[in-house]
Image (cartoon, rainbow, N blue to C red; front, side):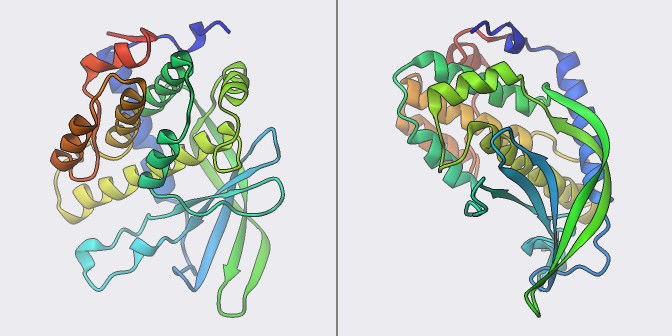
Length: 271
């Protein structure tokens, strides 16, 4: 396929626009009402996207980090993405370590595919393929005390939603196939909401708990650039020891340096 739709020239303007979109989404997700909800007591499952294959991607909130004996560790905007397969079953909740395992298990000899996937993650870090929408979303409240759902509630949300090129998704589906039994489309949407939650939590920690300016290098940025490090390793551009050293220095993340990105993306990303 023609990859012109994802060719990227990285500029300060792109970086600034990404920051504006991230802040807009953090604010939007923070304003979702959590009245009457409590982690592990009554939680809302909010449907945000349905894929072309009938999979559904939700966020479920409040998350576990909304509760803590240490007030400085409470993150009231915490949520977790949920992915419902087309057969109705839910994929297990994934950590970033699970995602990195999945990337390492994508045995693709074709370097082009890995370069394209790396480019997609890089563009996600900059929120380049996102559209601002305002819509009403269906919310089911799960009462864990009597194991029942209360359907029919709606939540209004205005946000920048991930909207990748459809032809690109078809290309990745054909080349990669399923990941954990789900489509690449649903897996990318799931990852987007994982890093959205990271942005919400880190912003709250910096601005509300510590009273300092938000460190926007963490969250979405560091996590997705760590995905690129793993892909660079799979391609043979990065040594295993280098990645381990980056994880140690990064305290659990190993973001790629920009000078490696053009190589990892086969020139699809340039500066």
